Image 1 (cartoon, rainbow, N blue to C red):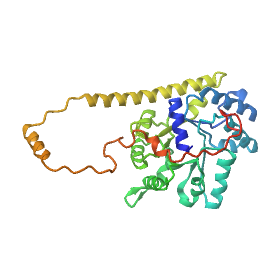
Image 2 (image 1 turned 45 degrees about the vertical axis):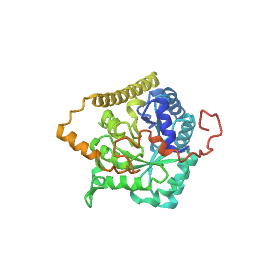
Image 3 (image 1 turned 120 degrees about the horizontal axis):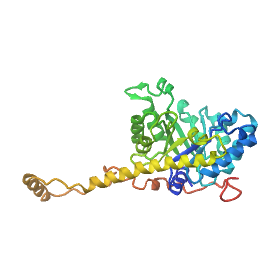
Image 4 (image 1 turned 90 degrees about the horizontal axis):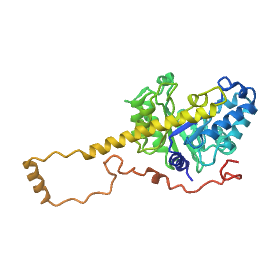
Length: 342
């Protein structure tokens, strides 16, 4: 199964486009869980159990685990094993290095930690990404336009009349030969998000920056999906993980996720209602001169329509999942319980 298809299946099953970042910070946890690696594991495990039917992916940032030393990396591996097999895991490491080094990063993240997706930095070009792209059934999210204030230092630079982030989006779209690429695009710049969505085609967008960083959930959902015609997932982390420092933290996390899912559902319902209302509007009557012109055209030989792509928005993408069905080979990566990673 391709990485994109697995993501779409999770979104359909859980009716969610929310990706939960598992960024474990002992300073924010309930005190009883912050004292040891075992306590951090129990905290994260309870979060996963409470939210597994309300997310489309989990995204642990590897820095939070590396900072705890070898025990932290062991903690990450065990947490990935506890995530249900049908929920994608995105390991956020923003790797990017020369090809030989990149192959070791890919082996570490895909084979050792069993990620479904990883985040990559494209600054060193295609050869730094190729080892990741060669993994069957895996996917990469490439940094395109981020939410931090320093994004303007490079990502907004004008390069021969185009912003650099657009060139990145176009390059990744070209590299996406096997439908295993996506883009990281921050929610804090909604107009650029809408522009990148047009360039990205059917590539999924990973959208951080909602909540604490000030991005709009509603605009992220609408613009990031081109009115729910393209795949996207919205990342949330601190507002969910640390919704409470009491023993009800898991229940509070679940409740906050439910609110976000309902908000996105409301945006979608509103767009559908607006489209339906427009379709019911009476069409203006044609002037008699226009009707005569139309009758004259009917008498002319009609050209057969070509078989090229439709110009009507959404016509070719009503079921965009069909574009990803080429990759139907699933890697045999799981040796334990069919509902758990092992």
